[in-house]
Length: 133
Image 1 (cartoon, helix red, strand yellow):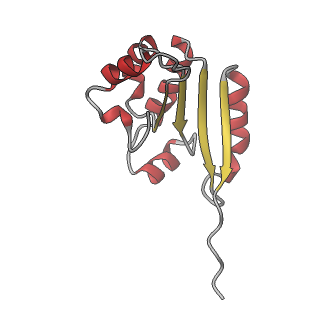
Image 2 (cartoon, helix red, strand yellow):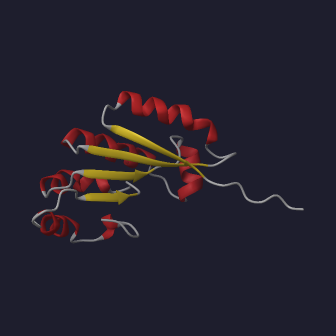
């Protein structure tokens, strides 16, 4: 479940329940910014959710607020913890590395993955803008 932010759907758990009941479905995943995901993870996992992808480009509150224009880093980190706690088998954090913004946090994300056995961190560098001539 992806596209925009799936957690804004009021019927998200119902949708997950219906999808989870489809014969032959092996993976039921959600991609989210994680801001409000924590509160529905238990129900989503009960509906068959077995993979979570969370977009998170920084582990610093100030940088998070600059990038997202809102507070909420503790919510996103809480969603990661909750997903692991309820037993979601695949929990991934998708990180876009940006020079001058978060490039110095790569080691912090690596450390986060070391402390979370089932946490996988995907680091995708964002291309630098072309230099002016």
